[in-house]
Image (cartoon, rainbow, N blue to C red; front, side):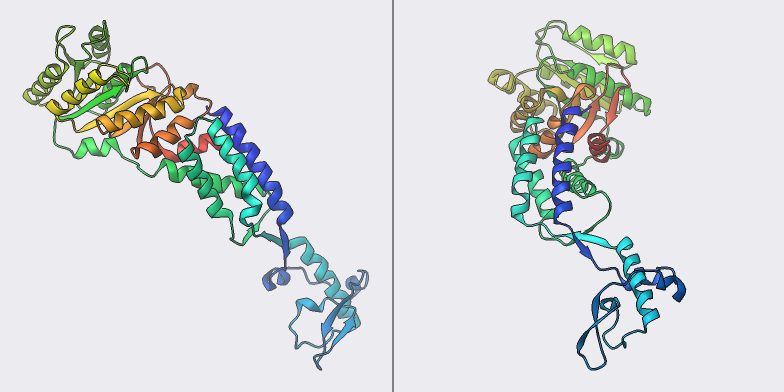
Amino acid sequence: MFNKLKEKLSGFTKSLGKQIDEKAIPVEATQKQIAEVPVISPSEAEQQPLIDTAVETKNDKIEPQKATGSDLNSDIQAPKLSEQKKFGLVSKAKALVFEREFILDENDLEDPLWELQMALLESDIALTVAEAITEAVKSELVGSRRKIGKDTTDIVEQALRNALYDVMSANVFDLDDYVKNSRKPVHIVFVGINGTGKTTSIAKTAKRFKDMGYSVVLAAGDTFRAGAIDQLQIHGDRVGVKVIRHQEGGDPAAVVYDAIQYAKAHKADIVLSDTAGRMHTNLNLMEQLKKVCRVSSPDLIIFVDEAVAGNDAVERAAQFNEAVPISGSILTKTDADAKGGAAISIAYITGKPILFLGMGQGYDDLKKFDPKWFVDQIFE
């Protein structure tokens, strides 16, 4: 997954990591680090070359000495010759344990951040989201004094990880906890356009809830598309849940209403309602969807689209959210998504969480969304 996004971000981290490495300056070793240098004998010290430097004398005058007195307190007398040689070795040892630090200003980041923003846009991440991510990276790196270790790209990668995680986790919602603590039956309506895997996602969700011990009823509210009712019936039979259906061409709001009444009468826990797939630009069907939600008063509305649709999915999610405010999203075909931009963008633009990721064709191929797992996939 996300191979293209991985490639783009890897180029940015290496480029900026190199720039940080060039900006890094030595930091003097601490007294603790000096103390950890092994003590040597004078005979060993005499074999080491001396380092020309200057130390303070008691009279506070700077005089040339063969010692590394810059590491010593100013009130210490100049050491004897053997001690001078010993300190020469200490200075060399310090060079092996020194650390480096860097401070970046906005000018240092201007070109790399532009490259990052282009990389994000090319990965189907919406402009406003790409801007938010680059701004977060800039805020973390600019102006702060940081010590660096062996690999400077780790610093850049961590800044990117933090920025992406903040975007993905801003609106986390645990559907399982919601269902557990809500009054039954919990009614969930699924919306989206044709051909994105909405009906299959309903079947996967039904099986998941059934496996958790809940009783589930499906409402065949897609009375518009030929074969949609039979398709949901087949899924219902396979996963072992009840399907409430009317004739093709009937009123979808009536079907959903009957499913809710059936669930109440039979003390079912959850009602999952299918609806006709529709483009967000089809005003008549969008009005019909509003009627379904008005009559049945769903507890949650879940938007379903393909992860591979990229920015098209982002636009559709925003439009559906305006018509019938969605509670969260399910992204299908995530296992085939090379860019990863849709998941990142939808969560940010709609302000609603990603609930599940469709990871295959099987009924069990529905993964509960975890922001940390998602970000880890990008940098694995």
